[in-house]
Length: 146
Image 1 (cartoon, rainbow, N blue to C red):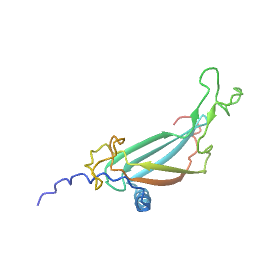
Image 2: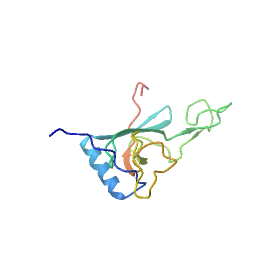
Image 3: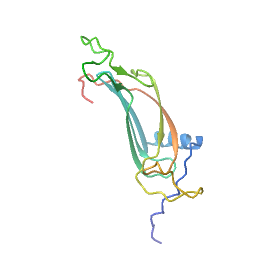
Image 4: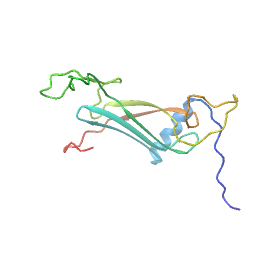
C-alpha cells in the first residue's frame, strides 16, 4: 500500500491547552524550535517547525521591542544617545529572562472550512490552532552578530 498524503484537517479556531502541551513535546523532540534574541537592545523571537495541531511546517517571526520616535529620536539604553525610543511591549528581555509567546498556526496550507461551516475570514492560512510557548532569552553574541 502506498502512503498517500492526508488532506489538510479542517480549520478550527482553538486555543485548547492540549496544543500547548503538544507544542512542549515538539520543543523537547526538536520538531519545533523557539529562540529569543537580543541585539543592540532590540529583542525578537522566532518559532519554527511543526504545528502542534496540523503538523505542517510554519515560521513565526516577531519583534518583541518596538522602536519609536523614528524622526530625531534615538534608542533607549544605547550609551550616548540619551533617547527613550525603545518600547518593550512585554518587558525588556535579558539573558535568562522568561519570555511567553502566544503563537497561532501560520503554516500556509489551505485548510477547509471547519464544523462551523467557514474558516476565519481574517485568516490567510493556517489551521486555527493557538498555543503558548515559554522560554528564556539568549544572550547576544559577544561579537554583536545575530
